[in-house]
Image (cartoon, rainbow, N blue to C red; front, side, top):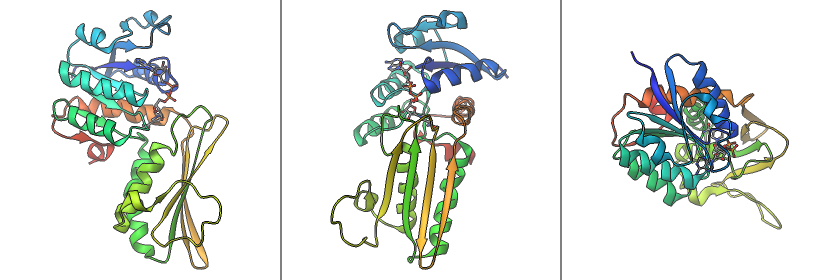
Length: 261
Ligand code: NAD
């Protein structure tokens, strides 16, 4: 089987540089292109692949590539549209996309195979399967709260992972997520409503990413914590997703759950 051709968007970023390094070490992948903002491309020529500031220009020199994108919401929407228009594929890990941006990526996924996941780690994706079971087993007497902790340079809050976990909890409860999410509490707020999922954000230092879900019941509580020790866990998940998406057809916006089966 020939190696999967990958193009890295944001190759100098925290995730991008980790992905570049791991892709180069993986015999099943062939790093064929990298894209960075103008002025940041210095040194990337040493990678021995196509280097550019524009994804369109880089993809025009390549065929059948999977673009891996951990950048910003605006850039990732543009990446999705570009791969759809040019007949390539994408794995997107960027978080903080609003509803309209998510809809645009979903539309692009009708024409090109695209996987988007706010968290590429196996652990968090297993957690997404376990949480509904805990909700069902514990029943209505347990209040749901979450705390997420990330490094101080993170731009979006709450984290995409926290939003995804909270959506999963709301779905398991049969609640409307938009009406039950609570991202902030201040002042005389009164007693906690029963149908509420609180998500609190902490930022500081170089924390890669911690999420704790609390099930707070009468006389006891369960705390379920996932801690990412290194960006490599996300990067390995994204590289596995790149190999997987290379064999998929367009038609839906894929998630890690589709890959895990
Ligand atoms: P970062 O700021 O370190 O990296 C982003 C990179 O994108 C930078 O190098 C920047 O120059 C580059 N970039 C911006 N605009 C560009 C453009 N037009 N063309 C090419 N490159 C461009 O950020 P990061 O910490 O690597 O995180 C990036 C995103 O990934 C964030 O949304 C973050 O929340 C998300 N993330 C997701 C996961 C996951 O598992 N899905 C894990 C970690 C981070």
